[in-house]
Image (cartoon, helix red, strand yellow):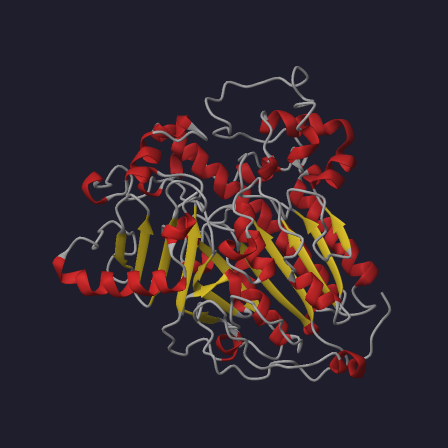
Length: 509
């Protein structure tokens, strides 16, 4: 792609006006957003770093005394830390599709981890590429098939396995069974006819489910996927960072399972030092949806976690995996500074969803509870964001596309569901009663949807109990208010707003 001048770029249609959502006023924009593009020689670059399954409270800057995340903490201190950011669907593929498309899952239709993203769904890479940006994706994005979705430059799990060569066997033995979420295979259809090529080749361990409690990885640290993503991202910055404006996504796998970090990081955390969540074993069946109770009784992913000793070890290895990702985030941020790119690069960090990490006896994601539906969101835009700022207003990953387009002075396309929250980057302390929506299990017998407005969160499930929580007085979401007479009006109000946005009843499959 040829380098574009600032004048040519602006001629493509700069419009740094706020972008309104099309399906109700989705989350928190402030709606009176003002121009945010900086007067520099060229438009700002974008570095979007993300992980997989990072629960939002697992940050030192969030007050977590176990997490060791000095590089993410430093990024938070240099910009805005959003305390109430949410994914649109607490499962990898649907959430990532929303992050890149600016659409809710019921509109983009990538509804589970085996559903192909429709070609008609365009992404932020398409929009920025059309405005003169070079677009790169290095790491996991879980596209399911071979579409590149607008990216010019792409390296992923398959390239990592090419780098590993015979050492891929070690990865296969950590994953054991086919798991595209962990990148083996990256595209499930590749094994559809012939089956798992590792059958009979790898040594199986004694895990009860499809994932392990965890252990130290047999891979050397320099061979881990996180090291690969950081190394190749730095190569991209060196080779292409100064040629023209760039949009680079650097996407790590950890702390997603398997929880098998490099040895250096496992030495930082010990099972005997981990504490089970205060909510462990305290869920009231009378006020808890049946599907939640079933998952507490039996975790099909890792049944061993019913035992406290295994749960503590799993937790220690989760934090070790997160520390490994943080270490590689630090390498990438250092490279950005050393190359002289940081003063004109928007940097943000997030995750596709969280991790329950034993809260209520639940693990992984797939719930609307804060540890799973919530995500970390750290945002630094030079000349725009203040330093060391916190924003309590609820925001959603579906808004990231509109926000970045506004910051880069690119006109957003019609039809985005997510409105820009750029105003909150200028004024993170502004009071805003924005609304956030999320959904899950669409096109199944029991789909669900969530609305968060102010201090309240309401969750509706087809053919199951609904839930209403006051997050100010009950941050652990242990007291379901939905059936209490004193909250009848609040429940009815939020249910009406949820159904006006999109009816979960219409998603029964």
